[in-house]
Image 1 (tube, rainbow, N blue to C red):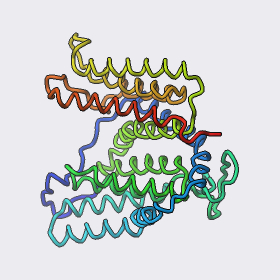
Image 2 (image 1 turned 180 degrees about the vertical axis):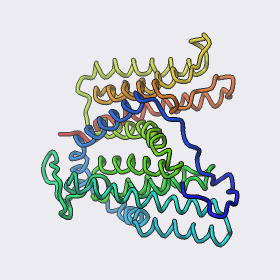
Image 3 (image 1 turned 180 degrees about the horizontal axis):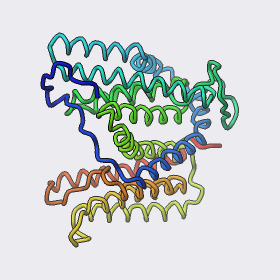
Image 4 (image 1 turned 90 degrees about the vertical axis):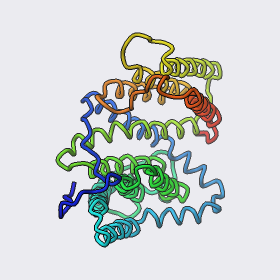
Length: 357
């Protein structure tokens, strides 16, 4: 982290996040495997999604896409950081100054990493892709720089830092970042895999700049563990969206098995089973997450979900442990259960809407 300058005490809302506990090595390894497997799966469905978008009129979203592109533009992000920096100096809010400087650092680092990866991988932009599959090779040519998405990477990196100033509304900048990423897809500027890759990279870089730089390994490792579930969730959505149900009977079996796992996870969370002493949180999380993966009926998603469960089971920290039901109201638990059922319903509705063939 960049020092506070004159030593004034920063406001609690914008204090730098403390150095996170370092997750276990197996947790980091399995999380990395989840990310690699997710990107491999996304590369497999990128072309069908591209063809689907090309076959539909999305002009109604064009203006929103243009705004998303402007918001994720490097000049806009730097301007936001500079305005916060100037405001912090003017109001003598050293916490704001520190956040602004950290966001500028995150932007610079992610820009360097992204542009290096873009030209090292050399993936063609969607407008240059006219056949199935994708080819990569180191290149400095314009248009062969699709992976990862620069707009998404920079936006996520910057908002990860800026969110420190909005402890209760930190979801707002991340929603804006999601808008920027989605706009890159429907505008045809990037494939879904490019955007998800940019999101993961931006979050890791932003998390490193959010903590003491000397603790970059711990910060980066924890960010890797935390972003893996989100990447897998997006991958699962894109995968079931592009794959029809091949075997209805097996899909029904997976649905029933997944619901049983989710139900048992909820019971463990409520404290109605596994009454022996011990932390029920990891057990509940693993059962619930694995159940959601099984519900998809997709072997790829189920396998990656199993890896994710192993990652979080072996993590020293990561997914917060669930409290016992006594610490929450029955209404809150009911809303949680309805949310899980809604997620299952969404998965069922998404299956095969944009088939590969």
